Length: 311
Image (cartoon, rainbow, N blue to C red; front, side, top):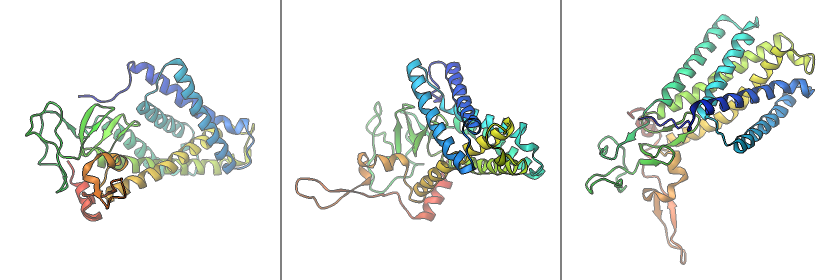
């Protein structure tokens, strides 16, 4: 059963994704030539504005033309573009050692393999005629739910949630990840976290190599029309990676917090509609006081152990 929702026409969505990637990277690479920034910091600020402008312009154009991009294709094409720039430009710097070259290429290769795995992984799909109560974690006081079409004696744990995008029920549902075109659930949650850490490490490594290239070739001293295409690509791709790392670090911190407290993103955002997270407090006048209570939190160590034991 395939749940990669890439639209009605896959070639069209991939073409739009490719155009979006090229437009973003061309815009970033054009910043040093069009705007005479005096330092990398100024360049980063201007690049951020350009990237935001390209994103808004792209959204408007896609809406006017009635087309959509494929988020997984955008992620893959960005990775391919960075890898291509590294092979064609960055690795030529004398400061890039053989060990660093091998490590970065291995990291990029593993990232591509990891994306393929998670895009085609089973996050924990639950069929309507299955009863996965025995292998699911459930709070002692958590009631059960019955899916439409099941008999009364067929129940599922409260930690089976419904994904509106995939239109399916998922064990340990955390969220639907548009970047990978798949749900993140009990069976691929660990892979998702490992892949997120891998992205951060790879992008930091790539940015470090770009910085070495910039220093060796004195690119920073040639801002403006004197800078060649190689220098502009080194700076623009390094800036892009640093932007990516910035939000990914906060994203990873959030997921580490959720794992340590044994709560899913969907449960944290929508806890009010899940009765097991309700703690009745003293009523205030005509309002029923309901506070958040996490019945699944067993302590950091046991929560981490439970994540590692998920199958």
